[in-house]
Image 1 (tube, rainbow, N blue to C red):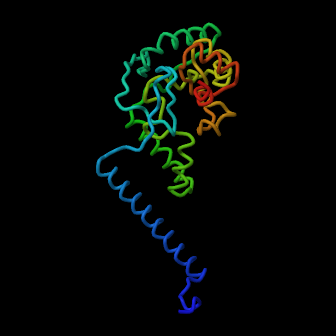
Image 2 (tube, helix red, strand yellow):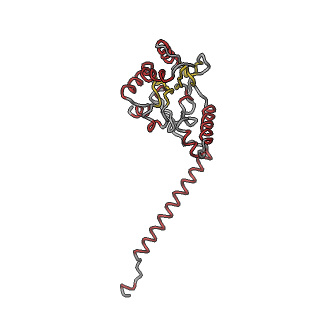
Amino acid sequence: RDLHSFPTRRSSDLVVGDMGKKRRIVLWLLMLLILSGLFFLKQGISLKHYANVDNGWNLILVNKNNYIPKNYEFELTELSNGEKVDSRIYPSLQKMFDAARVHGLSLRVSAGYRSEEAQQQLMEEKIEAFELEGHSSREAKRMAEKWVAVPGTSEHQIGIAVDINADRYAASPTLYSWLAKNSYKYGFIQRYPPDKNSVTGISYEPWHYRYVGKEAATEMHSRGLCLEEYVDGL
């Protein structure tokens, strides 16, 4: 035969063939992802990332990306007003309160340990409040998560964070100023500073304090770090 009589594949045929092959690969990968997801759901396997405890209980980083580890254990001490905290932070908390009172400040723990059920209720109430303001359910949820931690990601659930407020008739701004300047001396940090919301994911909360220990608190205070930044540098 004449050499030119043999059939040849046109470049357009090759392109169409390659595109068909790519589509099949994409469809195969999508099917694999769907089947994997169904398997995890069926087995009850969680895809959540749990907080690392290698740095010690006082430096556990619990936030929207790090859930409280399963079977995380601690003991609680009840305060005079009925609130509870991890027993390991109680002595330092008492010293800080005693020092504040010496300076003429009246203060109280308005929120200590909180169960997951209580955290869920708090989240639902915040979402409902935003919905009543006219926001959609989706937008209300997004806004609520800037103020309330998703259940399972709240430091209140492990008892080493406290909301500190002034007693009635006392000036909270004065108290917040004192805490911001002195809390590190007792191992506490202002967990959600005004200039770190892009890092923490939580809006400024002058009342929310978290125990990390004196050494870490002192370094974080002097360097202007939030907990996420400090742990990232360990």
